[in-house]
Length: 421
Image (cartoon, rainbow, N blue to C red; front, side, top):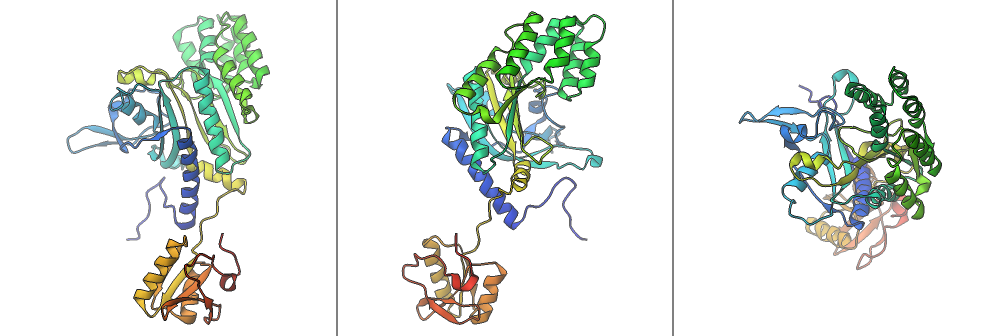
């Protein structure tokens, strides 16, 4: 047989894996600098944990499986649900606010005809036990700093509010099924369907007008003012106050240049309760990441607490960086060390590594054979260990000069023609 990866999964190899590792490390470093501590959870959760969030709790269906005891399990479809479980159980006695970060693979089932990935990596944070506009602004500002840290210079964070849409639905006074249909249509960004529902008999004119206009409202403080006017006309004047204060904080800290208020920004209404956010980058038709406030989720695990967070999809972020020409370069091998004296090869390579070099061993290779070994791995240097010393080789395999002791100088340009970074 010829082995192959399963549908929706893929191998990440060599340079690409190194590039992903560098980007992930930059994200984690920013999260850590804001005081977010790492948490790791199992890839498998009880299906009850997943179901507790409700039918709209996840972005896609989880993989389901039965263990040998007949218990129904699920591969985690995102990281928010497992971390909410941990916060409600293992960390329930923590006084909070609890700040946690993660970098982990998640799994989502998709029908074969959709051709979508079924495993991807999320990097994100959760802020549990903190409420209000300052906490929401922290989440948005942290996302912006993390994206800048990985080299993404052009991006937009769109923020909206679930509260605003719920306020319009409540003001309509229509049957529950009508409100559910409106929220589902808004979630799918199906504006024609929202307008059709708004035009149904019995919907107050001011609510119909607000639903038709507000989901298309986009901008800064002016967009919030327009939304507030529509809310006041519907008798719900305070529904946008929290978002207004959050945006004011972001303006005050110089973050509003990458933030746009977009009341068409929505996520799962069964999951989020307040501010919601989506991250967009040029050249990518899908969000790079998203999140928001989900104050009711931990109550499903018998520990009510306010919470907010976001996740960045590493795969989509790598595409965005590639589109921007900002993919980090994989670190090259500095030197290949060879020679007939194997012990000397190991000792010489160890000395170079101690000086900060990245070194590959080629014990037994000398002269032109050692040069070819260095070329195969795109190394800066071919170095031969002999007579108690290390010698640089030129392209013809001859000894060019001796590496100093300690080897604190970078590799020579004689071999590769390029400097070691």
